[in-house]
Image (cartoon, rainbow, N blue to C red; front, side):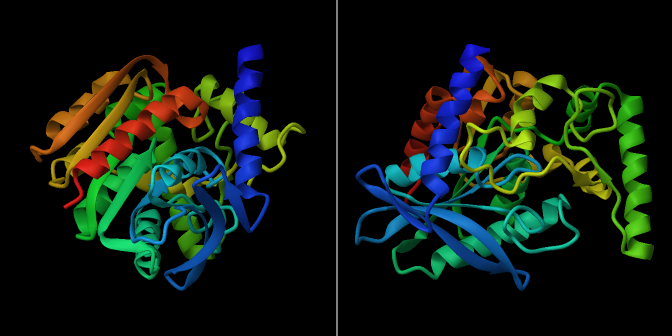
Length: 333
């Protein structure tokens, strides 16, 4: 418990420093600032970490876990990549946090893919970004969207997939508990989607809970990590816009996405980083890595590492960012 509290305090200190000003000096060599850009004519709120240099720099977009906000794991990667010389952008996807979009808390892979492409548009509009050096990072569920973006967007030069919760049916069945629960979640999503189409009213479910299997993410360790964010515990200065709810129809997209089929279309330089006890363990991450057809790929397997260490453990995040930075620099043409 003491170790958990210490880790939480470290994370919160980073978040508080990163987010308490519109433009705030960070360390000695980069700054972070609040930015906004348009995606499908809606305002998207982002945090941009920028290396202090007058030269044009490589840029990277970071996309975090399912239902996440920028103040959670994404800012951990953005700050460190900013320090390494990248213009690093993380953001609240539409319908979340400080960004516009309705229904609120609607999880859509397609929307997030559009948001990432719009984030790239924004980066390319800046005079300090090198248009030939655009990269993307997906953490946890964000790995699924970033695989698709790497396929669709020619501007992306390389991709890094970190502790991916890959949307493969067998993996999701394991996460939810069994195939019966998986079927129940999917049928509920179908009904909720039809209701929203006919009435404009969205049904909501919890993202995490300590009991039952009705929530989006039933495993108790996931509840244990997110519960303090829901409570907005007093030792946190700022929690961002995270809420413990998501539209029930969101699972229609997530449970129908085929990450394995998507990975077979990736020809960009690809880095896969995964922990031994990350979601799906090595099994599904290795399936993804093997199926990626490009010869320019690298895998980093970290033993004795749980999924949430890629969210808030400074050692594991630091190791991951070193690998990401090296990979992107190797693939700058």
